[in-house]
Image 1 (cartoon, rainbow, N blue to C red):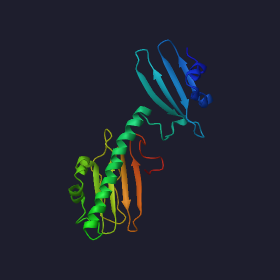
Image 2: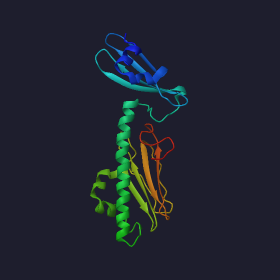
Image 3: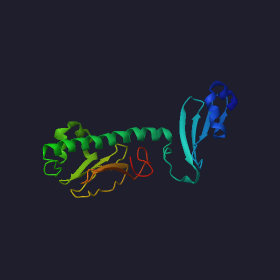
Image 4: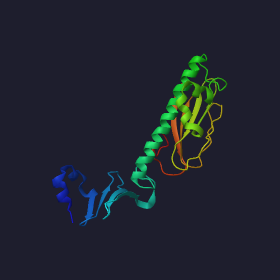
Length: 207
């Protein structure tokens, strides 16, 4: 089988991985394992090529503890969820921009009577695409936005109260991204994961 030395001769930067890299190969198959360079070294990422030419990307964490970067469906799955989650974050930011425009048009007030979801969609029609994944709540001095990521099996119809601070319904599936502006003008971005791994939501619950 192919040796690490042979691969390093082709790609010298692999030498930087040291003993974190391991390979097992045969005539038509191979497995590459790389241990993450975290302090605990707990996560191992694997790429397996089968004899029919297909490949599978998996990862494991010592003790089964969750780690950012390793999802239950493997790291290909994680890449996909990160991309999907990025779209949900973009919706939240777009909704916040529409909310600011609405307040400008209403003497600085974010009150739901004038800056509800329908008003935001009128300002930014692309928000219609989020459908049942988007919810907003607001008072005269602040607002909250919730967006459910469009992962398979997401929990629709998030809810946000018209209160200060806004209250959110917790998701029963998938991940929910939140953006809050308080009366001082400070904004916070948080996320809550119910199922499917962190994806684009950091392990600290922020984005």
